[in-house]
Image (cartoon, rainbow, N blue to C red):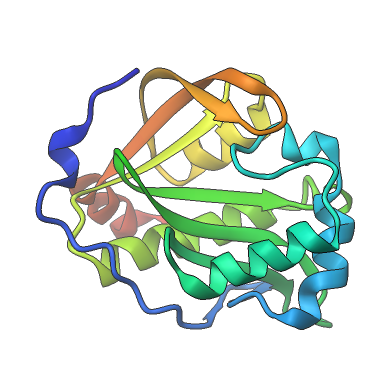
Length: 195
C-alpha cells in the first residue's frame, strides 16, 4: 500500500454540492425520486464487485440508506448522474474523504456502460475538487481487474502511485491500483485539454 499521509495535512475538503452540467449529464444531489432507478441499477453484482461499499443484493432499504448518507455528506459529496436529455438516472459519482485524502469515485449502471459517462463525470469532479478546495493531490483507485475504470482514471490525467488492498463488501479483500493527480499536473492539463 502506498503511504500518502503527507498529502492530507491541513487541507479542507468541504465542498458545496452545486449542480454540475456537462455536455450530456446533469450532476446533482441524489433524491427520493431516484430511488427506483438507483435500486434497479445498483442491484447488479458486476457493479458491486468493483466497489468498496456497495452491497449485493441491493434493495430499497439499501437505497434509502444510501440516500440518507448522501444527504448527510459525512464522507464527502455524492452526485446522481442524470442524462441532460430526459433526466434518466445512470449512476453516481463523488468525492470521498479517505485516509489518503480526497478521492474520486464513480459507478455507472450496466445498461449505460461504454458511453463515456464515467469519464465525463470524472472530469467535472476533478475540476470541482481543484477549483473548490485547497487540496494539492486528488486520489483515485480501481480494482486491478477493471480496465474500464483504469481508462477513465488515465483520461483524467491521474498517474500510477502503487498498489494496495481494498475491503469490498461483496468481493472481500481485493487488490487495487492507486492513482494520484497533483494540482500542478491538473493546471498543466487544463491548458491543453478541453473537456
